[in-house]
Image 1 (cartoon, rainbow, N blue to C red):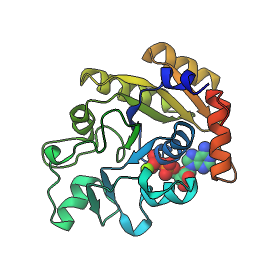
Image 2 (tube, helix red, strand yellow):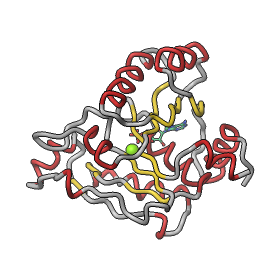
Image 3 (tube, rainbow, N blue to C red):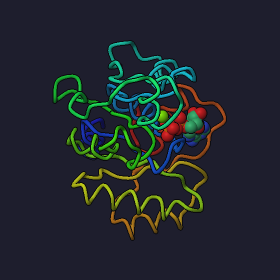
Image 4 (cartoon, helix red, strand yellow):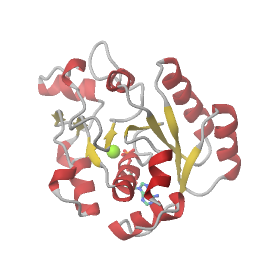
Length: 215
Ligand SMILES: Nc1ncnc2c1ncn2[C@@H]1O[C@H](COP(=O)(O)OP(=O)(O)O)[C@@H](O)[C@H]1O
Ligand SMILES: [Mg+2]
């Protein structure tokens, strides 16, 4: 049964979103548990609010070896370019290289969406391009998502980034799903409804429900 999944999702991929707070970290935790993947967040801003890595470590209860250390940890909860400026750090595209052996499963989470600047010249899109991995796009399910999803899909395609698929987060919306698949020419891999209690158990249930794999 695990073969089924590995044929449909790449071993290493980049999780991006149409915006901040669309559920990239939530989805990364769910996929980590289901796929037994490693996780890396190269650029983390707003560390006082807690890092995405720490949140996922706590919720998944996975051991430390599943987590790679951030390349840039920035204090302010701002766009990386602005947070780096305040900390007196220059984020270098060349300093961002994927950790671990290339055949090891890995989920890389971006900061914000694809057009978030990381320095004077580069966007998060350039990071995805440089890492040369396919992207999974996490979007909202409700009103506005068609525009945001298609904009992001266009941007990724223009940059030559492969799109493994879209994951919709929020109340089920069949019409928006069909529009994204049709106009975006991408598969919607999963639809995740809001849940009351986020836990290792509930994330595994979401994985099983959407990908049909029993642990
Ligand atoms: N389907 C969901 N059900 C319940 N809570 C969710 C769901 N998706 C996201 N959340 C919560 O919403 C907040 C924002 O999600 P998060 O994954 O941190 O977004 P991002 O990484 O894109 O900024 C977090 O507190 C997260 O746990
Ligand atoms: Mg996040």
